[in-house]
Image 1: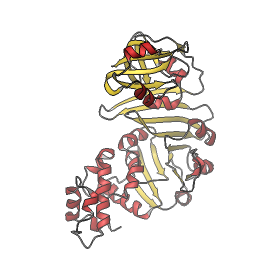
Image 2: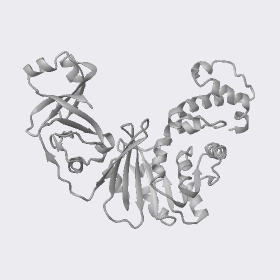
Image 3: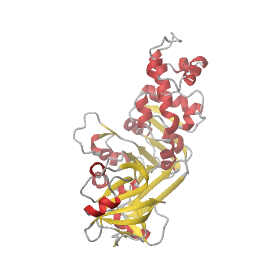
Image 4: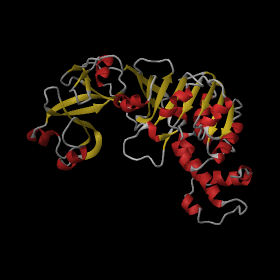
Length: 394
């Protein structure tokens, strides 16, 4: 990729002027810059569009070069990169899977020096250019295989960061770290030659228990959600750690710039209290749900659980809770005459928890219209009775 030609002021203006243009229609027009590959220019427009919400610092900066859109889709957002960088600090860090460099940009604010390793030569060149634009002078870019780079440098690092990607030939539906590149499971002892701390990012699809079976010395697992959608799992590994890990469920609200963090000790045996529905209802955020710490939620926040498998909580007094909060307006038995009176043909938001019928089936069967201010939770209580909780969101 010829970066110099893409940086020409006329091409940069063309890219910025067409960010709201349909790229497929634009591609059919005549190339106004015959000396530069038109597909490359169009790809810059597509990738920059993708970066608008995810990477606002990049999007709003001049003379940034973008890789293929798949690299934008796979990269960390600035929101998660900032959180990730808050977990480690020190003299030096090496990123074995550099990618578009978002994580390293924020790591560079926590470390005196950062090394960005990237196999793809074009991507490495792009990232080096962008770091120069940002004047991130404490980041060095190395193009090549990170294991070879580690051996060549032969130095100690305060942290090694890895974001392994699933191999194209990986088979089966179960996500395993051993199916990824780099294979961090096989390489863990190799990495320990150069560091005592490893930070691994994985996709949310990875099962926590499966990850713990594959990795050793896991000190912390961070389940990172943004606006109640789990984006990534972060595994902090410490060479000399031989205890049970702490599980940290995080939800970051972008607009409010607010973080909700719940810490669960995996070695502790938590006791849940069980109650019939009281005045208020609580639905844990997705990072807490991913943690599986359902008994811990009851104990940590002093709320009653409706049923062992319902994962809804209740209290008489409203509390600050990591998730959605509701006032319970009515408790309706799941019986034909009660449904006719309270549910049939109404407008409401339907959810099910530990209930034999799916929301779509319920809406179809009882002619419920989606939306409105009523939130209906079809669930099971401590007495194994099917009930409907009609609620107002707080």
